[in-house]
Image (cartoon, rainbow, N blue to C red; front, side, top):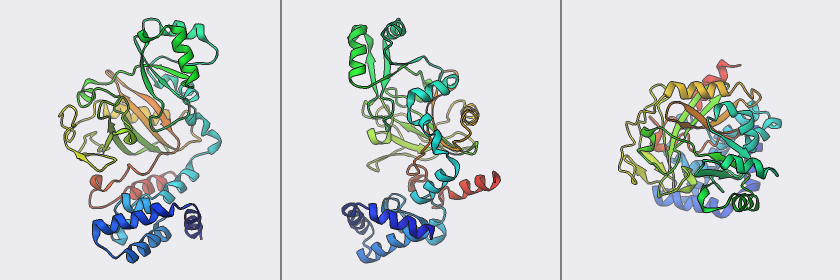
Length: 331
């Protein structure tokens, strides 16, 4: 009944224009009968809690029943979230200033929350040529700006930040030269996903096209990292499905990259899990620093969409078996 209830909710909220556009898209890719595609999408919703976006994104039309059972779909991801994350603690991750305060010892940089404290802000700015400013609650890199402090007087800058609701001010994070060499314009974060204090998946994102953020929705690209070795084994892919074995901006190779301080990165995230044990399923964004890794932010709603893209799967197998093993171990 749970799966039927989930599907019923999804149907009620469905964007029907996009749904039928997905059918057309899959038809053009596969030349399969549109009615059969329609039926198969509904079937995947009933059996695997997969929406039409999952169906297209994970190319479920190419998978057999056994392979489909290994994919973490939207519905399955939501079930994991409900089971392991206490929503009464979500505010810690949804407000960047609160997150910074609670996880301060893992940040490795100075920061300031603007709250009628101009004198403190003026003091903070001393000897800082550039800063990063952020809104408190937006995601996907929205509203983040790198500012040259010489372009404003302190009062002008303070007013600008208050007027634009960029209340969080941070030092520029300094990343390891090995990572910066691939793309120097942004902090190229490693995303570590932990489930009950176990690392279950990891990937790295790179910025592109001169952008200062590495987000997938801002021309960024993503590829997975081998959990044991810390080595990138697959090409990166962007939202338009372009794939990259070398970064187009620097021509530096992506495949074969060994993430510096890999064991320290995993240990950092596992240790950070202890601060808010009520949130058991977390996506950590980590900067690989010059001498040690440190946190950029945490996410209590890890998106499932970048975990198991077809180009990064081995043998068409998704990540659900890994998640299920961890969940079984921690019962």
